[in-house]
Image (cartoon, rainbow, N blue to C red; front, side):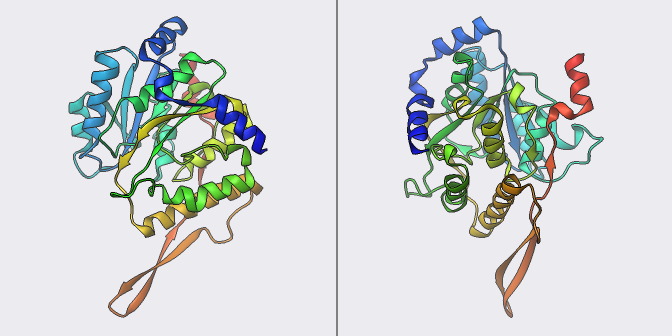
Length: 314
């Protein structure tokens, strides 16, 4: 297995500089494929506008690489929608997509629903909390999909500083996701950022995948894609440094629980005995328990949804 991962790292791990923009654009013109960029957003007014503006300027106005930018707002209470609209994105509210199925909170829920309001043959997901954003994040991960028909999903890899400490971000990746992948899905051990929110894939793949509704979506998608299309259809591209807002330790604990649950379902297709996580906070009378539910729902492959099938026929 180690030999297979080493071979994959040699043949399916690239740098953003390996594919110049003129080469990517030529491939896009010759193939006729369209590209959608999706930003799932919840209270990201400080960063979402800058990200949208950079993508529009660099990859729509200067170079015709991206065909649409869609921000899916999952219930923001700040000015996320207004800022994203002003920057040039199409903003759609989560609850307005597929209203027949009541929405539940969670990032995966938003990504799943985004397939119904985008048209691109290639869908590129970008987190809305990135700082000092570069359009290389988009062109870098879209490039292999446009230039290599054998690639179906591409994840960004990058350094994740924690404050001033280089390489200390991605704590859930190192403490939860990477051990799980190495032990149970060693073919995926070569992914530098398996939980990263910046990745692109062919619609033809995404519409066949189930989507965990919460934080487990990235891990679940990677594992399911491996089983569906094989390791050589997966790739990663080095795009430099990712700076974003970091969550506190308890939030990371809840994220880890959701990721463990996603892995558990894929290992046994069983169920959690107790789908909740109890954490502790110090109060006036000592430590007080706080119990949170763990996401236990997954959305079916979009290709099974009648509204999606009807849209494709139309």
